[in-house]
Length: 400
Ligand code: NAP
Image 1 (spheres, rainbow, N blue to C red):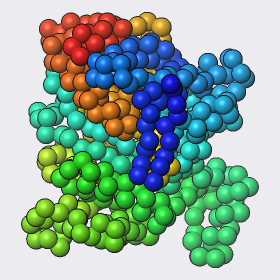
Image 2 (cartoon, rainbow, N blue to C red):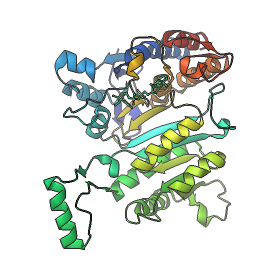
Image 3 (spheres, helix red, strand yellow):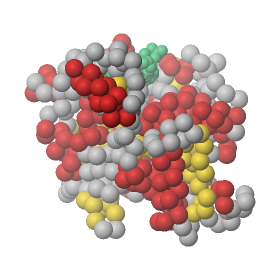
Image 4 (tube, rainbow, N blue to C red):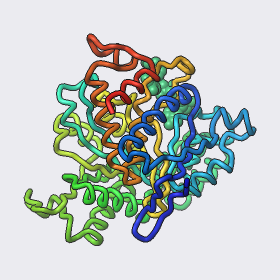
């Protein structure tokens, strides 16, 4: 019987037939979803022999929702994610000039999905611009609710910005050019602690090698610098017996998880030159945005990079393709479904269905390694066999 996933004191309670809401997405979303869902269902069937099944429930958002209901993000959709806890979505068009800034941001804000989790690793056969993409194996925890990215901005010349500039001059003596736009960058102890706590817990549970706090605290002391301070404090106060600050251990962490920090600009160099030295990363919104795409590019995975937005306290999670709707390929059965497929792998792992997740990951890697790829990889790979979206999914299923 299909039933809702629930959050209990011991963590997620997942029935054998969990109801999982999905948004197929706009543009190429329907092509990708149709392909990906076949992979998920077959993998679960094979891993659990019919004992477990995902009970998909379609919910609407984006263009399809607008055409059917007049609403870009109907309340019923948010309600479904709220009730069933864990869902997945394809890419959504950002309505230009609409009331909603971004549907993705709206979903994250309403459910307070504070951690954007992006695993970045290389799969055999994926064309990469670097010589040793196999050395990259990192998981980025990007704070999702604060920072300059959170939308608190005033337009240059607007009455609001004039009032703010007057206030800042009168109260703080800060002279800011009158034709400036202004954005706020709040970083709170609450927001930092829960994000870093999630990264530490993940690293400890998964037996990862280290956690690095990435910041620009040398310049922005009370925001980025405070993130670093609070981050170390969570490690010490809440995980003190299992973690150690790298600076305090003289390079000998023993069996404890080392916690380090790095300045964002230097860190972007280090992940290119010495990627094997970094593992789990915890950072704020804007740094995390740049890092996620830079690292994904390093493993050639910008078209297949998965992501999840998670609130570890309530259990709410929405896994998603990290690319956009690629509208010019819509309906052509052409684009790479890898990002949604690997987002599904993250979802399965989050549910604790590790066998099905591992099966898909191995089959996807074997497919790409055999040279069967969609156009985006085919154009970068000599001797590849180019296939469409649905044929790629079939090739993965054959290898499950
Ligand atoms: P995009 O849709 O990601 O497409 C940019 C380019 O990336 C495509 O032209 C294609 O490159 C490549 N690409 C994207 N997805 C691919 C896939 N599955 N397989 C192979 N190649 C893929 O970015 P955009 O054109 O800037 O944005 C289009 C719409 O998507 C906008 O409305 C934007 O707001 C929205 N968007 C949504 C999300 C989201 O829902 N998470 C994220 C970003 C953007 P080539 O043409 O070179 O092959």
